[in-house]
Image (cartoon, rainbow, N blue to C red; front, side):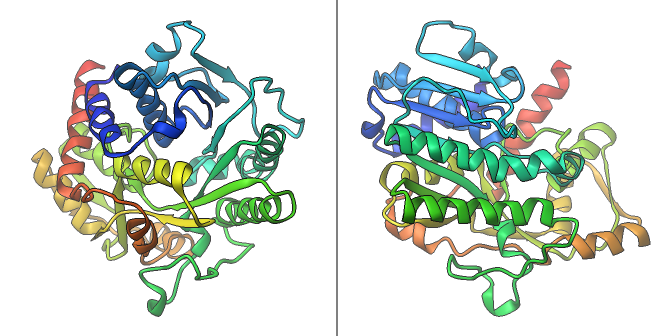
Length: 350
């Protein structure tokens, strides 16, 4: 089991009462993703350290990735990994009765959701409805992992962006493959909640990062880490004035567990509090890795980036912070250092 991720998860499961999960069955769709991995590690370690007896059923299109392989190779009947195509139109054959379902199966990296545009749409719509039908049949609670992308590019008066902001999105932009299907997924959840009496919650997640985000990730953090660790130099293609607010993955997972187990409302923002420009992000990575920074503008890149990427992403997380007794969020500097350490260890092992 990965040492850094294990340390995070052992620390964070002490910060929440997991009693509602005692001897329950939890489905995690999107098991190989960053969030799915952390949740499964937390459930697994709760079983070991707290004797929780949680049955974990993981769903993913791919076989267990390296971080999860050890857990699901135990063959002890407590853990099951099913390689299934959740984007397929056919109803899911999932015989084990569910108590809780976390639906995080999606493509979130822009390059990947464009290359897999059809599956991206169906993972957020068809798969969502199939899992909601499973939740209705079993009387389970479902948590749908949505995204801050549903807000589009908010105007200044709606930053930080609260849950009641309806969003400024176009259905005919490059990014709409992801953002509009996430919005439709939320609508499907709303329909099943109000018309089918399904117990469902929605978490709109913004910019989760941490150990598990590798140099192969196509988003900005992964690409900067790739350049810094391989070449000791980060080359930016624009001035990096856009603002992002990052949330450490263990903090994100803790918020999600609180919503899943104790949430009273329907929709919650989940994010961090440390906002940073893209340039400052590059500078921080350079500082921690001993790399240099250069800016080499590309007119083609800049034009495309302006079209598809929000200028400022910062969620109002007051609802989730006020409703739950959350510990202080990990600082971005510490979280980034742990992310770099995790990647450095992986880089040296390869």
